[in-house]
Image (cartoon, rainbow, N blue to C red; front, side, top):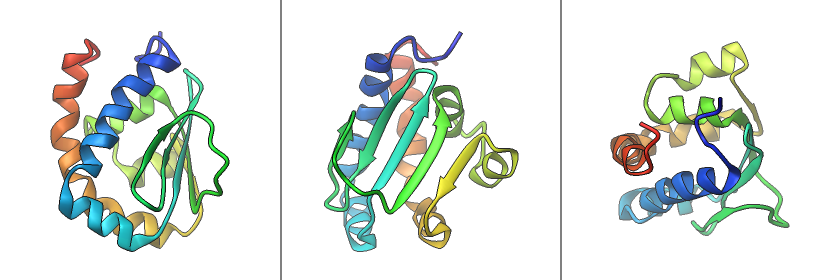
Length: 129
């Protein structure tokens, strides 16, 4: 059974995570400076999460063109934020597929520290830890 029982639950949990990340002033400013739009195409359950070039988080469909497209399962997403799955290994094993300028993706990895710190509490709060 998938870690996220529904698309709505996934949006609730991951939406909270990404909004928490964007409330971090240092992360927010560096993300804006990158001038990229990331689309997470998530399956099991199916859904989309967008981080727009102006720092907004959108859960669901959007008429935008992503700079970077990340395709992964809800379970892989959960494991990634718990640090049970690293990006290089996930990419190598096909757990995460990425399209777009990979140097831009890798440059943003240091910005994820606050999300790694926040996710275990968020997951626990939503009973998926």
